[in-house]
Length: 318
Image 1 (spheres, rainbow, N blue to C red):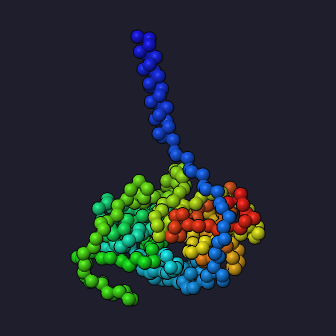
Image 2 (cartoon, rainbow, N blue to C red):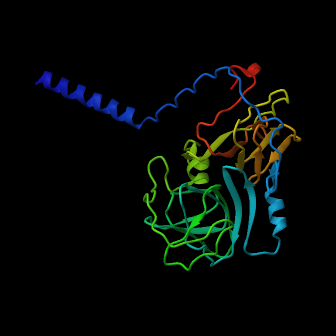
Image 3 (tube, helix red, strand yellow):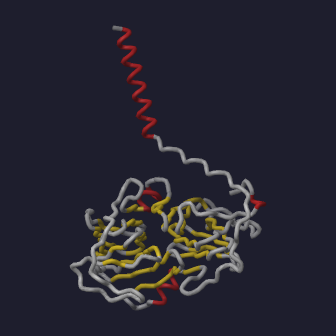
């Protein structure tokens, strides 16, 4: 009897330990050590062609559309990605639309949107919601409440909208004619790695969840980076550059300082602002503001494992 009790207790303790282990978050794998190589740096570095600019202040975007209830403003245009601000008046709804080969990322910033993604339960998204719409799935965005809805929307540059066959034939796009055809490949769906949405301020800022990548697929990487304000590093700290693509950041929380090669130092970019570093330019981002203030920048580029080129002198500080 005593032996049986001891064995039962040992089994119970083992199961309890196993349960605690299962509940503990998996540690982040250590990044691989950088290696020294000859790395091609675009020379001269890429210029800022419209509508791209180093710092798109949200206040400047609003000023461009003062008095308008419905508007869109192009913000990012590069070989890989496009991103725009959209505002929609109360009671209005976007047309049902899908995208062929890549996910759509949306950050809701003001008002409320009723998000209807085919095959999923509709939900209402407010400020700070990050939405990840799977490929080839029609969705609509309807403004609810008595305020306009404002959101930031990101697509792969190669994607043109698809429309359900029940809709009227859409206008042709430059260089493309819309034809009624069968579509292969099937539709995407949310999964454990890519949930349909994240309520960032509730789940991360207030709830303590870890800020991490929200979309991580080839052609679209949307990565939440959160940290405390620190003194701006010296100009001698170049940061890094990217060989083959541009990168941009949406300021979600706090303030961001950004040093970009060839541009004046950006200090105190505010929530809702968008910062862009063109291909081949050294850049280094840090969180500004009062000591200890938390900040979040949402880094966006086309490659989850994109190459970062650092100076040899920075060895050990990446």
